[in-house]
Image 1 (cartoon, rainbow, N blue to C red):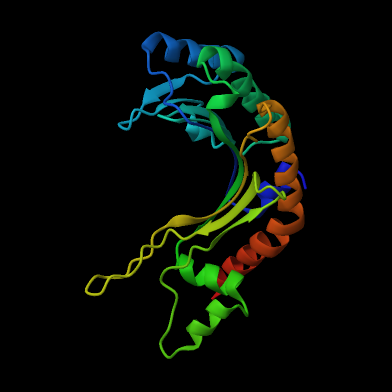
Image 2 (cartoon, rainbow, N blue to C red):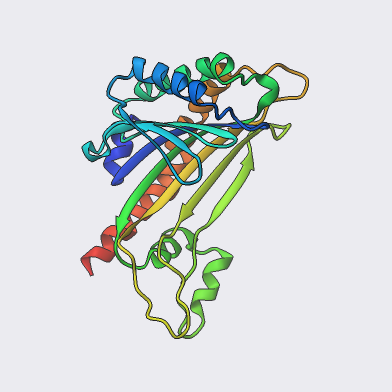
Length: 253
């Protein structure tokens, strides 16, 4: 499937990459500014630079356009992504640049990388009860669904997640999660649905092998391939389409 096909199934679509490190990342002013300026040189439209209260540094394009790039630097991880990308190479070019820059600009070598994540994520806007949507769309005839047969039962907390190994040595893993944004009802308080999105994400994580030098660029390309295959063969038909159909049915009621 093309990225445009993914975008047609949801309200927002994201592709993110995270480099998770063992050691804390540099915080010197000159180092940070040089790193982000090098990125902006490649992508001049990334002109919004700011620091969050958690000492996370961010560089991004204008969010109001609906489609934008971003790069972040946290205590022990570097993030890079594109919101609503038009094609995979648009994302991959940015992510490869980050992977090429961090060894000599942030002093990150293969020993320092704890893991590398590639995430494909989707948001589905729905103002009603997210837990009911997720339970109806995904639980089906599972063991969990039998609990909803109890008198007066309704789901008020349903955010399933599963991690599976994709290799015999467990170094390559996939995590699929569907997150409800409806707050859990508390006795004595009014149960209010929030006008937020149901989030679905697929993350392919690669851990470096102890007997090999980790090639982050080769790993990134392989993880993108795995993510695309899983999205087309498993995630879209068994997770995305049931969610889309259930949301559509609820809106008609």
